[in-house]
Image (spheres, rainbow, N blue to C red):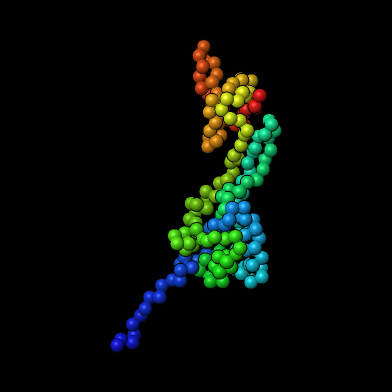
Length: 189
């Protein structure tokens, strides 16, 4: 028998092989802030400050319009997910996160942690633009309160949440022409 055989024991299933980075865990919906608080408490109790650097629930400011009143509220950017800047190869850190109440697992193939790329992190920090939610639907009468079509009235033909616009018909050169107007430039009549 050969005694000097080298065996590749590989990585344990709970390791990414990537070390320190930003990782994502999936949580029960609505438990994101509780999971964040529990992980932060565990970091403090187990002295894992060097293994888990930050726990984040990404939020964005959203302008909601109800009854013609604009109000800015904070909403979760990714409901059901929490971001962690951590060393996923550290067994103690991995164990604490994985066994936190409300955490269903790391995001990655077979729940094996995969860190976010630089490009993905840049996209997360882009959240500068504000999304506007408005209580207008097709068939509602609106008035344009700003922009080129200010003081124009119309009936909403289409609502596009993605582009943050409504389409109305306006009379242009004697005939009806569809025009897109920004959510922030309209008021429900």
